[in-house]
Length: 248
Image 1: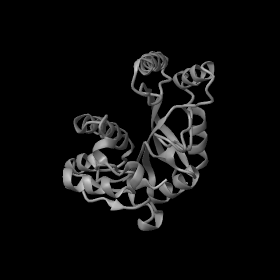
Image 2: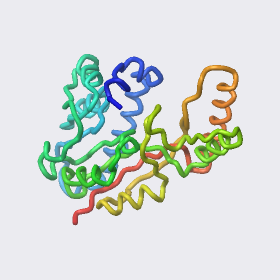
Image 3: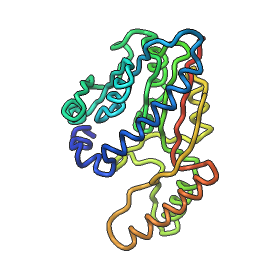
Image 4: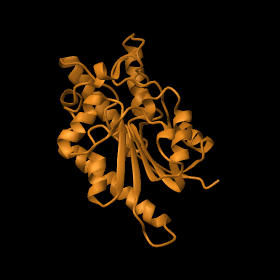
């Protein structure tokens, strides 16, 4: 579907993601990356170069620049590009990530947050990212964890109701996921494209959207309990991963 039609209103799209919460989350991400990046430096620290693919409203770019990092982003939705400029004074490249738009081995860090599950060919994307990352550079991923019990319980719930639904993939309706990964499958994909996992954690979160009404409230409560239990066993509904680009 046309991206502008699906994501064209930033206010509506981000209504459940207020700016303050987004800034706090992005700050946490940058703190993690700074620790991991510093641990890999073998010489005097230098300017960090960062690329955010699918940069949204540009919060992470703003925060990275506030740290003195050389940060830039690319975003396919024009309305988000305009929102980044008007809200944070951040200019984003409008369009899809293309490795040829950047020099080889240009960046120390690449961000791919809530993007990989939307991409028809994730292997090709990761190969392109590897090309623009410096050897030893870091790739940050944030993806749904479809191996989580939370997703499995939600799918079981719908089957018991006699509905041929799944919360794993949603190619034609929100949130428009066309790929799914668990801890094992994402490790294999990263390994096959030249990355080694340096950090991984799971965390709780919504596994699906629910409609208004009493039944919807019951569903949300049940899904919330399932995600909380999954998170207690370190297998939450979402994964944060930092992978290191192999030198060879």
